[in-house]
Length: 195
Image (cartoon, rainbow, N blue to C red; front, side, top):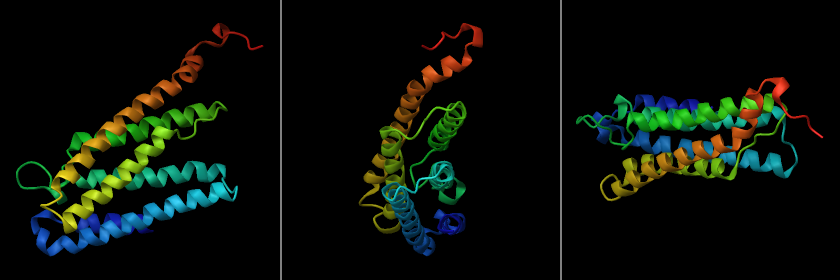
């Protein structure tokens, strides 16, 4: 529910009326932070209390991906246009594509490999990537809401760090999936018998 309200606030925001709409960024910041902390706490408690379900393993990452990908898509939209061909967030459309590509790639590979009966859970780089992306969304919103001029450098640094970590995550997951994908692509007669 928080995610839907978050997207509603971002869709109502206009950088052209930044002074009047600044309160929307503040609301969006707190909504995203609350949703992120709630999601982390839910996952932590599920693991701690041994309540992890197959449904939760599939749905929980989807909610994370929708939140982050949606935020990055909004950040390069006309809602955040700076009037000079860029955005006030520092997020270019190609950066949002990298974030979206990573999520679609990993989801497709995970679905395929787990459909083969193998585990393909989140890795440490995936967890770092999610943390960096969520922190970047908060930094962008917080800097634009409260520290637009003084911390603009932090916003830009966070955006580029997110792109770098997301790209590294794609490479890491591709390397990890390679053996399973190669084995699945071999005709059944060519596979070596298991002992």
